[in-house]
Amino acid sequence: GAVVSQHPSWVICKSGTSVKIECRSLDFQATTMFWYRQFPKQSLMLMATSNEGSKATYEQGVEKDKFLINHASLTLSTLTVTSAHPEDSSFYICSARDAGERSPLHFGNGTRLTVT
Amino acid sequence: GENVEQHPSTLSVQEGDSAVIKCTYSDSASNYFPWYKQELGKRPQLIIDIRSNVGEKKDQRIAVTLNKTAKHFSLHITETQPEDSAVYFCAASISGNEKLTFGTGTRLTIIP
Image (tube, rainbow over the protein chains, first blue to last red):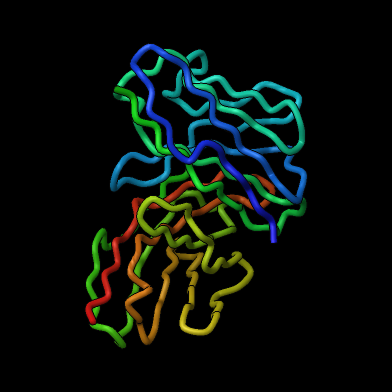
């Protein structure tokens, strides 16, 4: 079945630094990937839709200059948290769907970001 | 935009009994309703989904029902087992638009 790989699985960084998270579709091509954020004991909130070869579409309230998304190929999307602060600490999960309207959405393993 | 509400937020069930989780949605155009199971610190896993041309779908101990008129859908787990303990999320979207809106989650605990 379709597999989405996310890296790293966890990262600790100092306040003010930037962190890059990678999301790869391993056995299928994904023109669209999605980035979610999940705070402890809360639901998954869509941050942005990553579109291969074009700009990402951000949800209301998500700062596009802070959360940089690049989808340079059909199998890779990256999310860079710039100038991270403690309030950015969260579980970030990417997802993608194989071709075909009826294919389910597959999630990466998630990245737990802790900003100290 | 779509708004998905989910109840209850926590549910404790004796092992072997059934568990029911309910969701309502607001956008009548939504026609795809998946359910995800998430264990602590792990990715959400799709356990079952239903489309609006179907009223009920079953896969072994798991079933989902959909009432499009009332805009609600439910997850039913029968003969619950300890490994069913997890957080369950419902979601809704419009087919062809993969953007999923998630419910707030239900923490299910199976009591041995």
